[in-house]
Image (cartoon, rainbow, N blue to C red; front, side, top):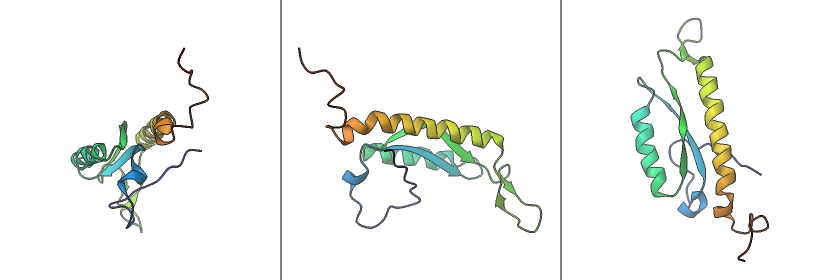
Length: 117
């Protein structure tokens, strides 16, 4: 079973590094330039606690991905390109999660691995 966790800002109190080590992660960032600098800093932090981030990223820009017309000004309305980026990112996260399953639980892949000859 694949579990997807969405972590915004800091994690819940009491979470240990061991609880999130060897997870796969995708990044959705926002900002004038898509929040790419913040995302790069987050990638470095995640590497230190052994979270494998995928290359694909969704970078939301307030000028292109928000609707400032109508009665609900400032509603997030990402374009079709963001849907493509999100699909690619989630596919990569799922693939990496499956690959990292053996590291999280060494007995998970023991039956499929050949033994020494």
